[in-house]
Image 1 (cartoon, helix red, strand yellow):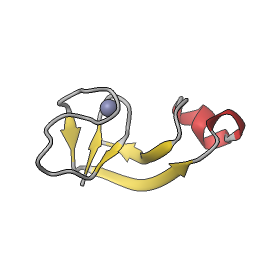
Image 2 (cartoon, rainbow, N blue to C red):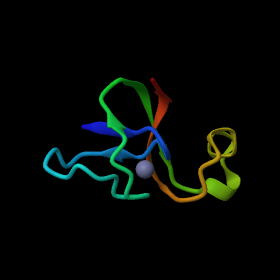
Image 3 (cartoon, rainbow, N blue to C red):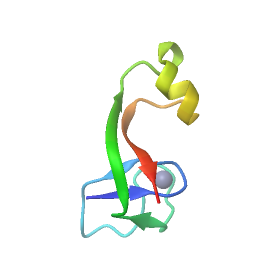
Image 4 (cartoon, rainbow, N blue to C red):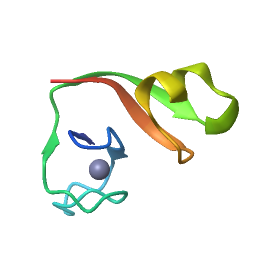
Length: 62
Ligand SMILES: [Zn+2]
């Protein structure tokens, strides 16, 4: 799986070169840590990472 450099979304589909969230093709497997954001409005991590949509995100993207 790969993480999007633009929005940090985790993309599981190897055959899809585009991010399922923002449609960017800038995906990388150089990332560490995965967070599940369920309730972005009430999540400190979501605020820190500037995430406003529930989903699976990389903590750090290189
Ligand atoms: Zn993205």
